[in-house]
Each structure stands twice: as C-alpha cells, then as structure tokens.
Amino acid sequence: MSNITGQETGVDRFRLAMAASGVGMAIVDLNGHWVEVNPAFERMFGYSAAEVLGRPTVAFTHPDDISLTQSYLRGLIDGSIPTLDAQKRYLHRSGETLWAHINIAVMRDDFGAPLYLLVQLRDISAQRAAELALESRAEAEHAARDVSNRQLQLFADSVSHDLRAPLRSIESFSALLADRAHDRLDATDRDYLSRIRAAAARMSSLLSALNDLSYVTRAELKASTVDLSLLADWVGAELQDAEPERRAEIRVQPDLQVEGDERLLKLLLVQLMGNAWKFSRDRQPIRIDVSGHREGDTLQVQIRDQGIGFDMRYAHKLFEPFQRLHGPDQGGGHGLGLAIARRIAERHRGCVRAESQPEAGAIFTLELPVTATEDAI
Amino acid sequence: MHKEILLVEDNPDDVELTRLAFDEAKIANRLVVVGDGAEALDYLFARGKYSDRDPEDLPSIMLLDLNLPKVDGREVLQAVRANEATRTLPVVVLTTSAEPFDVEASYALGVNSYIQKPVDFEQFVWAVKQVGLYWLVLNHPRTV
Image 1 (cartoon, chains in turn orange, purple):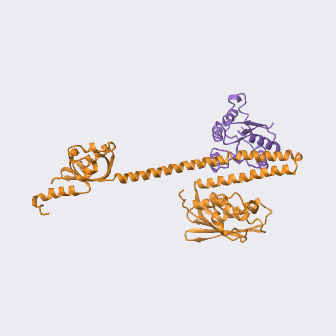
Image 2: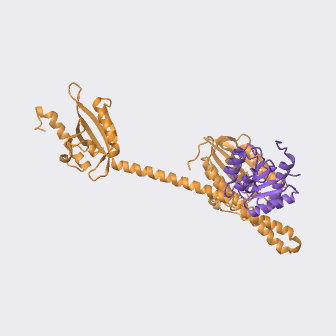
Image 3: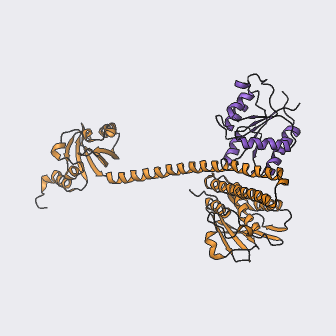
C-alpha cells in the first residue's frame, strides 16, 4: 500500500481494482470500441487484451443482439438510459455464445458530457444453459402430456365405438339365434348361447367402466356448488329403480354442500353407493347411510353399509384398477368402480378411504375440500 | 303413405339389427340405408346417383351414426342444418359411443336426439321402438 501516494491514487487504484476483480470489467469509448479490459474479461472471452483493444464491441456480440447493443449505446450516451442492467449474448473466441449479465455506467466530465462507458460483465452462460434445459424439459413434458392425453382420447373413442360395435353383434345375433332356433336346441345348446350373451354383457359393462375411468381422468372440471345430498338421493333412487324388488333403506343427511364438478361427483357417488348396494346383496333390507361433517376446510362424507364388508388386510388393493376382493357370485364387478371413485376424488384434491370388517359392513369416507381447486394433472 | 326412414350406417351388422328392430317394433316405414355421410347428403339433396329423386320428398327422420366413412356424422349434421330445405329435418344420432364429447358436439350442431345403441338386443329393439313411436307417431313435424 505504501507505493500508492498522492496523485496516482485515482487512476492507479482503479487500475489495480480492475486487474484484481473476478468480474469482467471494460471501458468502452463513445464509438463503441473497447478501450480497456481486465484479466477476468480476457478469461471470459478467451481473447487477450491486445486482440480486443480498439475493436468495436459489436464484433464480439452475438449477431442477434447487435441492434440491441447499438440502441443501448445510443441511450447511454444521450442520457435516456442512465445506467444499464441487462443480459446479452457475446461471442467467445471459440464461437460459442457467451451469456453475460452486464452493468454499464457512463463516466462523465465535470460538465456532465459523456467520456466513456464503464462495463461490468458476469458470465451467466452456465446458468442460462441450466434454465434453457429446464424450459425445454418442461416443454417436452408438456408436449408429452398433450400427446398422452390425445392418445387417451383416441383410446377412449375406440373403446367407446370400435370395441362395442362387434360386441353388440355377438350379443344380438346370439339372442336372435337363441330365439329363432329355440325348438331345435337342447338345454346345453341354450346354456352355451346364454353364456355367450352373459359374457358380452360383462364385457360391455367393463368397456363402459374403462370409458368412465378415462373420462374422469381427462375431463375438464366445471366447478359449481354441488348439493351432494341431492345427488345421493338421486343415486339411491336409481339403485332402487334398477332392482325394485329389493327392499332398501337409504338415508341421506341433507345439505352436504361442496364445490366441485357435479357430473363427476354424481359418478363418484354412483360408484360408492353402487358398491354399498352390491355388497349388501343378501341383506334384507339393504341399509345405506350417507352422512357428513365439516372438518377444517374439508367435507368428510361417510357412506356406510351393513353388507359383507372386506378384510382390511387387502384394503390397499381396493382402489387399484382391476383389483377385486370378491368374485362375481359375491357381487364383484369389473374392479374399476373404486378406481374411478378415487380418480374423481383426487381430481377434486380430495381422497377416499375405506374401513371394514368381514360381515360387519363397510364405511367409505370421502374427503373433499369445501372450495374447489383442480388438481394439476 | 308412410314417409321413409333414412338410416346412415356403415356397419352391416348394425343395419341388419336396426332392420330387425324396426320389424319387431312393427314400424312399417320403408328403411333407406346409406353407408357413408357423402351418400347421405347426396340422398337428401338429390345429387349424384340420387339426382332423379324429388328433393322435396324428405324422409320423416334420419338416423345417423357418428363414425362414418368419407363424411362423418358431425359433418352430415352440419350440412343438413346449414341448408334451408333440410334445416328442420328430425335427426337422431344413433351411435355406439356415449362419449360426453360426442354428445356435446352433436347437440351443439343441432341434433334432435342422441341415443346410444345398447349392446343388449332386447334393449336395442326397445330403443328403436321408442324412437319410432316418438318421431313417427307422436311428434308433429313441421309442414312446409
């Protein structure tokens, strides 16, 4: 420090600072030529000071940023830009793009006339590359999601149409055959035909369920205030209508209100209450209770039956597609109903839980946020 | 004199089943079958191989499948609703799909009714019977 004295202080101290700085620093004249650059600058650009000095800055600027650089220069000189803090692209000696965060101030004389531009540069190429990688990954993921949604849509359409149409032929023509050839067929023949028809009917219900599962996954949620109690009454009436000979007591607590998509929530209740109905097959009467209460920001709805229940050891399988805990003779279906129910609950940022003991009925608890926000899928 | 029923259907099994269902339902109107959307429009507008038809003699109802070769059901519906002569022709979509998106699109294009063909034959006959009863007996069509 002792060699820095008097007169030298202003200029030399500045030079020393420039030389020692880890940040790229440069002085540019009013014509936009490099006048001085520091060692950090040399390292950043891969050029020595001698190769740079006196040459225009635009010669080291990425072609796409040249006009931007020129307008910065004009603005700084005429004072419309007091100081500049920006990101721009330069060119490294290797030809690679060099992203820099630049800060430019104007050095002025005592009368305020501009003399030089003082430029500080920080290499942000690595950071930009990481950002770009992240962006392109997000775009790729988004595109992949679009593609998979479109494929899902196509799949659903073909499930709806192309798979059902032949099924109708199988069902209908075996029905017609059974009818027309009735007298010529013996009991075994007729049994075979009825097995064909029953299988077609099972497959048809499986296709409907697959379709529902894909629909609830990709349908756009239309949120409104939904009266779950009304929906549950409605579903109960449908269940009773489908099997009018069964005696049932379905009790629904009134005024269970939640925000959500009415169509999907109805489908959800169809699954849960339909499940309760199915597994109460041998009960006389069938009892289903739907009740609920607020808990914080959620509505907890319980659907309780007195049916055959299930073993809690298998509870984790309950909501997986195609998992069945009961065979067809016990009321087991296609194994998609509870998967559909869970998907709908999840799309409403809610969930479904089940508790049971064999022969002691089951309680399905549906937890839904009172205010709707769609789960990002 | 019963007016015709126009069935736009490319699946020969479904044509046969619809024919049988109309028989069972004792619906006497002649069933005209066309296999794709382009032919359906030719028939309605008396063009192409139907150019000797009287274009004013419209069917009492068109039963329209959605997934059809060449011109699909939605395009047929659009063309029918855009033309003054056929604007009010009763159109019933009779299709395999019950996709909410298909249902939505059909109503947006002005279909009168949307029916999913049941897989079960008895239900299919029942559905066709209802369609016949409603559109050919109960409904009072617009008289031009």
